[in-house]
Length: 548
Image (spheres, helix red, strand yellow):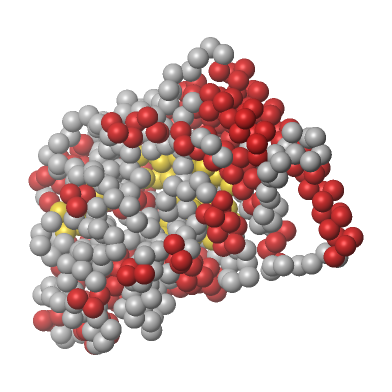
């Protein structure tokens, strides 16, 4: 996830395997409230009202477009993707399934799904947390809360994307609750701390099991890849009747935040702050053994002793370090060796996991996807330092995203990318950001690799500017257009003020290939189809019906 905010959540205590606790300050934003008896009627009123709004919008726009075409003629403003329907999904709250394994506030969820369906939303996305499903012990799975959700999604005629979330929830921007890795995994980590990523100062990060031990039987007789595979196989068997029909996509988590990357910029305990360059995460004994072996094959044993000694600290800038500065050691023979090894390890991790997922889900009809982080800060610098520490070997001279796209293409996987809503002009000058340039590069990489590209917004945004930027990036005029977009996230704010009508208009625009749809400010044709009517008459019904 592209990070620009602050998060107070601390690292999880590796020895603490007690019940998970939600963060109180955010509970009102993402947790569902109690449903009143009259709520179903109000939800139905919302659905009918939104459908009427959409029908009136279509009729009004048809009349206006006919008039415009008679005066000016029809023009083609964009590429061939203009007529492409881009389905919009909405990400559900992180605590959609409770700590006890049950669907959280099902009546409120039912009303929310009804509202989303009425708004023209294609479906929803949910995290299937490893720390919840397999928390009772190795190979002991509890899918009941997710089964209840899938049935409810099917009832409303929606689709669902399910994320195989093998990472910890907590410690990153937007993490509103704490869900550590399964307790039995944390017990193994407490006995062998090298099972998790480690930085140069020895700081351990329990967000995700280190890829350095992917093929070692370190989790009670199984390798991490075997554990992830068994988890995915259990999911397939439990939901085989829904795969390809209701469950249209399975996203395979491959690192922190579910993204294929190293945890190079952890916000926990104030370790990292935007726009710091981050630090390399290659100091657990398994990663160090691999580095040493790679150096020895080249006859350069001294290169395998450690990672770069001059790469600085989390919150420094590229020019503060000898490694990342303009003409730094990132571009000499040693730097190229290290970065190739570091990024290569990440690529191989993704390859192993996606190969396993392909073998498990092949023939089910569900798409597979993998998520790549939108690390846009210091993108304008030569070294792209923040991307390098995260494992993306992307510099002024090296394309770091084409190898990832080709790896995913080998398995028929959709590349899901974040920061689709961000514009260069919104970013602080000192951070050397270019989210738009980064998105263009990733779009071109997926085009060259001939794979589908899907998108997400990195931060919670409700304004028309963010929606307009997503519409712009969904076009195919520069590389691939989007095959789908997942909006972050369903919560109380989505139904406040003008946020809901903005989402309705956005979903409609995406369904029409990116054409921007706007509601008029005032009613000149006595249709009740205008912004003031929505705010004055319908907003209360919307907020009461969804109850999020």
